[in-house]
Length: 235
Image: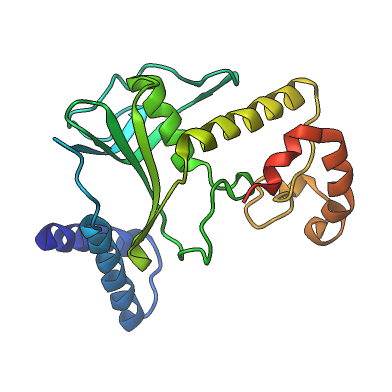
């Protein structure tokens, strides 16, 4: 394992240095070492093995192409719909563990940032990845499969498992249904993240919108969106 990490780190560092500006040598070396340690933490994180466990990484679903030639647990070309919501999803599952009898699954979303001070469920609609993974598993392997959905923070060597995943998925489906109904009705309004650092459409907003325009409009948007805005309050 250590040899594989060293080899991968050397290859990635060489490619990065050839294409991107890098910090001073001491800082760059420390960054590479921290990255290697993070990778080791992710690979060595203790989790009870499922009976007859098989593990997969970067698992494509919903029409995505595979990133490697290894075995897959399903046909990735099959569409994946979140039942009853009208939404189809696609992507890659960071890691999927399956029991030998196919009755249990564990989906893991690796997080590169810091461990939150408190556990989060949907985090106002920002933390959906592990739930989307779970929807994909259920759609492709059957509704009766038992799912453990977790966020793994390798920097802090800790995993946060979703409490009562079945209830959370049902709750999220309700929020998605409300969102779709709102969009179909033409109510595509601003939300809490508009005007922020990661808003790709911030160029369409007035200057300094995050500190003026958006806060003024947000409460009116809540009123118009109704049930579709309730997800913003979910922890």
